Length: 286
Image (cartoon, rainbow, N blue to C red; front, side, top):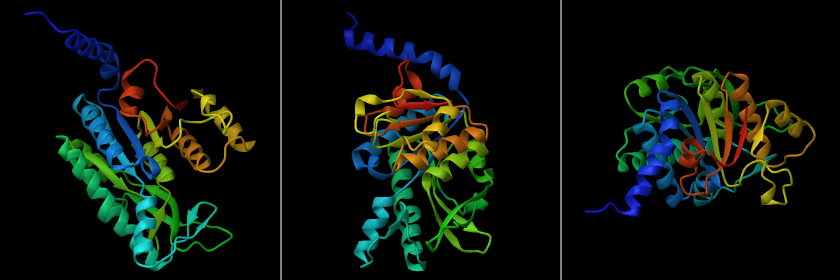
């Protein structure tokens, strides 16, 4: 019986991926996923990618956002979301809704999707095991319970990894004052990547990557050095939601993570293309 061309192609793809499987086996990757890129169909594919990566020896850690889910929950209880410079104004009632949306809804949904794909996942709040200690974010306008990362204690994540689980982390933190704080998921993920000594920090978003011309999707910059990325921030060549993403990447690099990537999470199996092919996608900062 002859071998089909489809079977040969599948074998060829696996052989092409072999050097990357060998290179990254045992490595920790921190992946931030959320926002507009986190549709139901997209989430199922991304979780499938994570399970495949885990099966070949990579140790992925997923940090998720959930801004749309938070806004939806707020509107359902009659609260109108308010933002200042892209940050959600978070009073005490809103903080309860943030925790409900992130830790009570989005986190278990992603854990469930991983397990539907045959993986083993465990949901972790930033408060669990003292993972993320936070402090109130200083700003000109009082944003309420909006915080920033003060310190990371990754012991609970290491314990999950040693147990063979994919940790799924929701970005809330416990303050020194005992209050719970709403954290920017990009910054929380970047800080965690640095604390874990991750080999890759990957931000999945809803744009192709860093663009030299924000009006032209074809102007993708495939690679940047730390110095070039910082210069783009200093000179205002990036704007909007790309600013915290680049800042989070630079923070991860400063803490020892050798590579940071900004990928278009809308592309099917973007993670596998980036990790297991020669071409890769998006923007890499090194």
